[in-house]
Length: 440
Image (cartoon, rainbow, N blue to C red; front, top):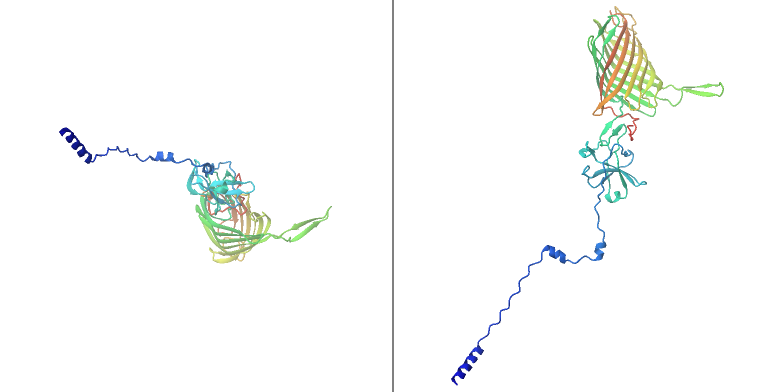
């Protein structure tokens, strides 16, 4: 009994104590998936998204122009266009002239190229400005052809974009020159070793149709060495014209009647303040022509009136500064001024002039009415240009006969001159053409 009671009491005691719950093991925490895994988890785009076109990059690589490339026309508008950069043109800046009918654009880099064909920091010189833009979208509809940029009339551009002048107007310039100018005087039977320094300003402009104006300022020649002397003119003006109406008409009746028109293309020539110093041995004389007025008649002239052969005649009011009196000096001349080529490289001058001195006072050792005769022939050719300013070779031959020097025998003196002349501001001639595939 005792054992049974003890067993029953233990069972009741154990029934009143809470039995602990069984420990449930925790599930391990999962780490966040990596970026690559998340991207893989993104669902593939639907077929509609794949079919949507994506703008592609324009990888057109336009080559730089070469020596055989075409030239952009001078008279068409120019457009600015940005193209994909290339190793030669990293800026991608180009200039385009487009032909709508051909769907073709001639394009050239905006910058000059170096010897390796890469753009430099120098923009193209003497080109028309481009103000409108040609968008790349529109440019894709054209065939782009590399070309050489345009050049103004009288200028030429090479394949690197560098521009050079090849046409020069020697009647519009500031000139400075020097020459070896020995002189031979018959009476002395010797040679004067001299050098000549010359300078002056030449201007020329057309007036109304059929008219031409020409002005020379400070035309000066200094002779240094044996028998030093000078010849200088402050102002020379020359007006020439071409008449539309003939002066008179000549009709011949041998066979079929024929008419010949004779024109009188008259002009005007003048000088103001022409100073001359003459030396022959120990004799020196100074003359100052206060003013000269001559009428001119063209025997022939070119269509633009620049080249001519003519006669001129008129009086000069002169002061003999050595003897201290004024004289009247009528004169006449046959002269020519010829530009032999279209680009102005070859220039010829020639002339013969005779003068008679009147109203002079009697001077011992010379005639009462002295005379002068001058002959001249000259040739100038452009040899090269420095910064587009021409340097020319000059050849000149002169002869003078005069008896207006007191106590000096009358006779001839001859001079042969050869030298160089540098011209500043010598623009292209007004008739200069636009350069094409070749020069001019």
